[in-house]
Length: 190
Length: 169
Length: 216
Figure (tube, each protein chain N blue to C red):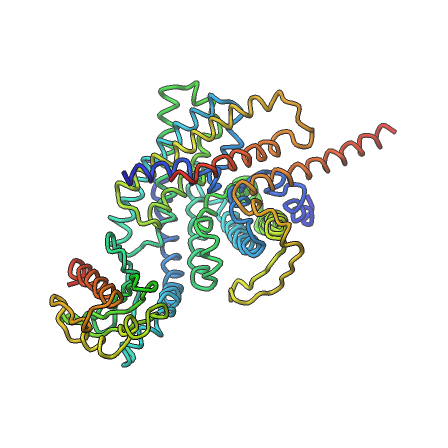
């Protein structure tokens, strides 16, 4: 039951985007089209889940015993970069349309704060292996949820009557703010 | 062949950065450790007055909810910091466990919430002498007529003993 | 581009946060107080300067295919060093900035400038670019945090990063009317959205004026 609570807390209450401000760049970048947003969500979920496992094992089985924990940042980011490269090659071979639709945002998953953020948090929150895996699933699912809803809202905003100065990023951010207020209301449940 | 050359280049760069980081780490690590222990040093010196040095240990206390921290002393002892609710509020204390299996020291840190005469007896020398010297697997002689506070502290000390036995013995 | 232009570029025309919209994660997260903003700004500028210099220096010997991983390793080393140094010498700032210090590694500004400028220009130009971008970032986060702290708590307090107890300067305007939600995450999005809207409005205004002047 505790794991379930952890899942809800990481996916909704402490939502990675609206509450912790990670993965904001893709939020603003990929959310213009809801189909792209969903594909991005899938890709990010895969990367974060696998990355959580690998970085966790790397930290506890290699870095800590060898007492070189200060190498965590370099090793984690190299693991993430390789994973993203792998996903890119895989998508290019199996579904070139998705690969093309996602464009430059696919390699940018490497610099997605959420991926590195989850890896680092698993260590600093002293999770055990199972909790790290739950985090690796819950966080990107929360991200996918938010980015998808956001994209559907933005599709409507495109045709809405927005003052010229606020078109684009400003109104998107204000929308995100309102969504964040809504999410804050869920905090009472957990 | 090209891939091998590229991989070697990357490996060399990573090795160089490893060296740099190791140097920075050597400089900053002692300062960080020092800051961690500085907060508790005054309290630890209530038990160890002979100039021993201390070190904060990272520990996972799991189900031992009353344990807040554990420190290693240069002479091999382990000091546990615990906090349990007594009659009026949390009682914070330090208990030292030696490698010979006995309690080496006890210090009550914060008894400001306890009832005078009953709870605050945990801070007396009588209580301390009941703790120090007792073997850790034997029960502690509590004050005649155990009070809520002394029972609380003794229970918490039991958790410290359990954690010690599991991890450091 | 003259040397001075390179420097000024990062401050206004291509301000990393207000124009290029890079590094948003940190802009939203650490702008709760001006002290945090200045601390982060200094950290980012330091990393940016060192990374631009190093990458510009090695730009001719790094094989093109692995330049991104190499840049990432360089930046990660710098950021980790900054993290260790901050943990040792400015512990309170280190705790308030938290995970966002290591996240400087994936701050698009640093990798972005390395890729688009430092890898193609000489040492001195790269240094100027780094200073300009770093100052631009710091300016932006200080503006955002000043807004948030002022509206959210009614005043601004500046602490000495090396000695957290010492208050360098503080003023308090209207504590009773503070809208505390501006220090919350939702408020961060709103503040940034509003500020960007205002800046965009100002730019449109200037562009319209320039157009009208042309027509005349």
